[in-house]
Length: 170
Length: 277
Image (cartoon, rainbow over all chains, first blue to last red; front, side, top):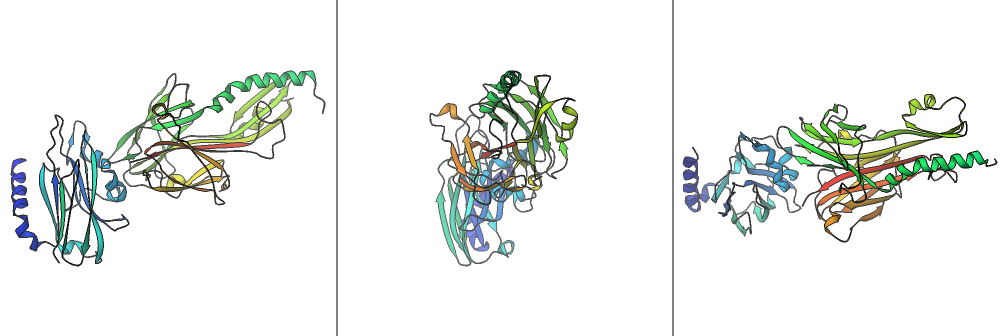
């Protein structure tokens, strides 16, 4: 079950540079491979905020979609503490085109068509990526970008996140 | 009025009777929720309660559970607690959160204290104001009564935060958050207002004590004063669980009241708040 979508997303990630022109906002998130006997894929949230750190819109939330013996996947959404308080806890989940299953280590790409960002006023914003891992740590990275003109940004996490990039293509 | 031998003796007895509660007052009463910010369709919170010098360190006395009241996010519905246990040094109970919003978990004592003399013996009572008349025995003299309101509260939120549980009642000291108490983060500022009998409690001393004192040498306690609106603003220096306290004692009380004498009108308030990193 898992292998097929993973292989597909890996292909898209590889193909991403040539496909950037098709997307108006593209965020890539590298989930680092962490050697741990008790490794679990991290919960990850990606959102847009204003420079004063007010959340504007959540672009992606990856969390366990099912209930298991330990509880429901939504029980641990609050571990993405910053996202949870700034907007996550006011969201109805699952959310179409936003929420999905946890991702494997590697580079993941989120493409947001311009139509989904209709209300976003041109100006300066941050992309924020937060990762929280069971029996692991939590990390938040912020990456400035400008909406309304082509530009790119890139930062690198230090523990739970690898390279993170943003590209605006119009 | 002449102080008779009998009265002097009864005052001594009263002093002895009061010694136990007074020494308990010197300690701090606390409750400690296992989580304050939760997600999911439902969630459980375990709550410990105790009385000790070091907040959240269960090493002195357990908290009584008689007056525990959990209020649902609608601000009205009472939520049943589960698995109550009174241990040697701490009590515990569980709360099942079944709907989104902010819950109040409180141990409040709002009532009246009374003291009197009957046949040379001191009498003492504490209870709801409605029971005062019946509690004082016929023939009692030197009857003194005074309102007493103690509140000990913490707040937990499942899903999105709500504010219905903060509606003040106008009795004793109450907590009116400007910053939601389940939205506190290290390094950020928070503002809270305190009311006394429904009016802003101005120029009141507020103590903020962070848990974990066993693992550091400096207690790192913060004391501050409310402004004219009864408000304090605090920038959280570190993540952790905080015990926030203020109290009031009738400044017009005659000399000799309280501290072993007849009761004095008083109120105290404690909020336990979690600050996340």
